[in-house]
Image 1: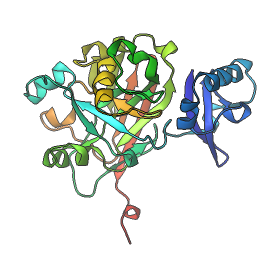
Image 2 (image 1 turned 135 degrees about the vertical axis):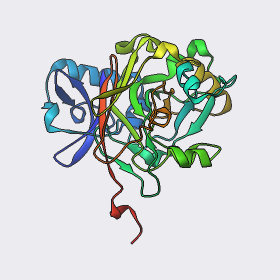
Image 3 (image 1 turned 60 degrees about the horizontal axis):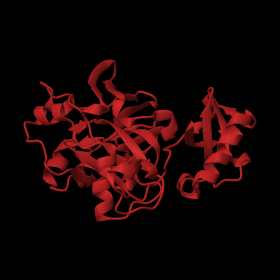
Image 4 (image 1 turned 30 degrees about the vertical axis):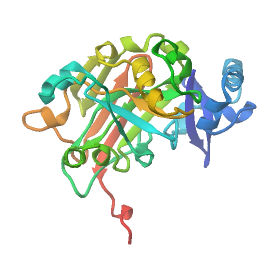
Length: 289
C-alpha cells in the first residue's frame, strides 16, 4: 500500500493511494494521524487494505493536497558518507562506524512544497535519499530482524546548507533549516518494495540529472542502520531514518551547483515514486516581527 497524509476541503487525514485516487481513510475504523495509524499495527493496516480493495470512498488524487506522510516525526535521523562514490568526491576516508546526525523535525516539508533559500546563506544543496519509517517501538534489534520494525519506505531530500553544516561538528544546524526536509510522496509498505537494497535513485535539478545511484551501493544498509541506532536508543513508530546520498551533490561540482530561487529539485526512487520541490527566497514572514 501507499499510505498518505492528505488535506481535502480543509480536513487533514490519512488514506491509501491506488489507481490515481485516494481511498479516504476516514471511512475505515483507524486513526486519522499517521504515527497513530502506524502504532496501531497490522489490524489498522488490514482495515485500510479492505477499504482500498473495495474501491469505495475514493477521491481523485488531483483534488487532494499531499502532505508530508509523517507531519512531525519524533526523530528524523540521517547518515552521512554512506555511498562510496560520494565519499570519493568529498576526498574523505570511508567511515568504520556509521556517521549519524539529526535533522530537527521542524524541517519536515511536503513532497511538492517550496524549499526556502535561507537569508543567511547562498550555499543551498540537495541530497536525494531513500528513507524508511519505523513501525513499532523497539530496542536492540539485530540486523536479521530489522525488517520486522520497518513500516515502509519513502523519498527524502536531505537539503543542506553547506556553510552552516561545516560550522557545526554535529551537522545538525546545516541540515535542519525550516523546509529542508521534503519527504514523501507516500509511505510504501515493505510488501510492495521487496528488497530495499536494489532500488535505482535519481536526482534532477531542473532538467539536469545530477545524481544516479542504486541503493545496493550503501556501505551500511537499512537493516544495519537499525541495528546500530537501536543499540543506543529506542526507536518509535513514525521515526524516520534517511539512508545517505550518492555522488553528484552541488557542493562538489565545478563550478558549484548550489540551488537558486526558481530551481526545481526532483528526486525519484524505483518502486516508490518521486517528489519535486521548487526553491524560493525565504519569505519575510518567517522572521519575528
